[in-house]
Image (cartoon, rainbow, N blue to C red; front, top):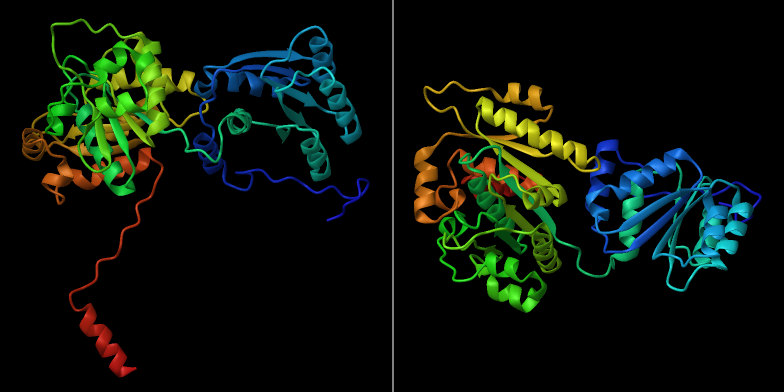
Length: 433
């Protein structure tokens, strides 16, 4: 590689560049974390870049930011900031060569307030230019064309300390209808996740009047999520620890009060505040959402990292699942499609819509099918146990484990079972050798 500006330019390599499209997208989804409340102003030269910025601005990870987009590139930014204060973050597109780009940025630096961060989107893939930009204090340099996920990852890296613990992942579980077993799937998958990954996980039961989290884990907590939602501004690490009920080494529950002598009129902002506090303290959080359609239910679904929809194989579930999936696809264009779990299939004497018909109608793959097994599930529910605790050899146990691994984008490494004759055969081979 040459160190001279007039020689062949070294190319910059970005995370995910050499990965297949699907894998690269998935990697960016995981790396782009929610961004705090900041103001962002973008000055673009081309429509594709402006479109990518707009798509990023509409994403859930930038939902707390205030983003404004202008055309005209760096010259427009310089003219604007000669009369106006600069925001927390400026994004500028520069289509010129190295010398033109650096000259424009030097002009911008003269009218920038202290503390303002800058992301530059250029059209020159040149490592020497990149080094010059870093010397000038530029936060990140991206080479066009860019995707919304590229931009979100860069903004996220600027405002989330890589050395600190990452923001926890939030998984939302909802039923296409009431009584389809969404809570059962949520609780079992969450328990498996906490056991396999050996990481702390909190289940938040948002069915405040009729939630079953306490029953399913054989707990009867005095306090829980209702206290947090009633005064979200008071919730901190100390209060959170007091309100959570520990069920195992790594799993705790934010239990519902399950009393009917009070009204539960939740505010979306209160729900978001509680989730933000939990995810700052715990790596994984599962939201057990009731089958209701309210402003806060919709907000929580749209803001979750992954969504799991549980349905039974009938027409009403098919219709409702399609409505939910269509809404999520419309508002979560940079996220994975929801996971669809078909529950209680192969029930005797009941006409059913097949998994293949679900997939064709919804245009998503069925993540898993759980067969109708009233004896195992009924006994586990009555005992306050998870399926794998009660009967690891049941048909449902490995399926629930599969669901847990899929939503966490993990693969479980299983050790091969050795035959009872293995020690004898090893000794025989040694002797023969």
